[in-house]
Image (cartoon, rainbow, N blue to C red):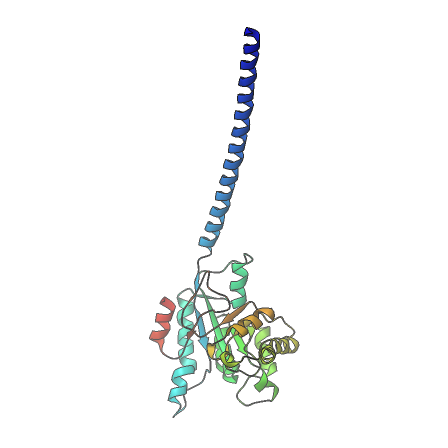
Length: 276
């Protein structure tokens, strides 16, 4: 009887030992998994924190000396060559480095490092005076810029717009060319998918055929959009789209709703926008 009780005691102790070992193993495995998950989340958080940036987009249109009796248009969209030179000089002297929208996308994908104080300089619509006045200043300060083109005026030879040869010259000098639709419609009012596709994808294909490059960046005509436009831009393979809503692009912002500043002669406003 005593021997039987001893055997039971030994067996019970052994079973308790085995169960304890198994429980300890499970605890260690769960604790290790939790530690690994915490470390993974910490790495992601650190990566996001390191990617915190703010990039101003400067939006220019016509660049020309002011003309009498065009005050309203000039105040809203135009900048004189002298004012543009002053703004570029300020950027250069204060350590700003120009980048393309496609650079920003590559940076966010982990494929590119951005310089200190990055800024995007953009010109909309494809006016000939951008080539005449802005392009030489861009080269003078060794800047980069993107020119958002809508090509219908070019195809019909309209006056005051860029030519394909001028665009190719700027492209060869390192400028980026972006899609600005085919005819510059107010996209918020476009509800027909066929029309939207022709405006966005049709322009992208036209630019790519004419220039022999891939087009990755888009700017909304008049700066506004609807959900159909965003959907079509994404399906066309464009990786960013810029509005004219005022503000600075910050990490985590929607790449298809990028903000920017309409920039004209007012130097004090130019400075306020940079510091915002």
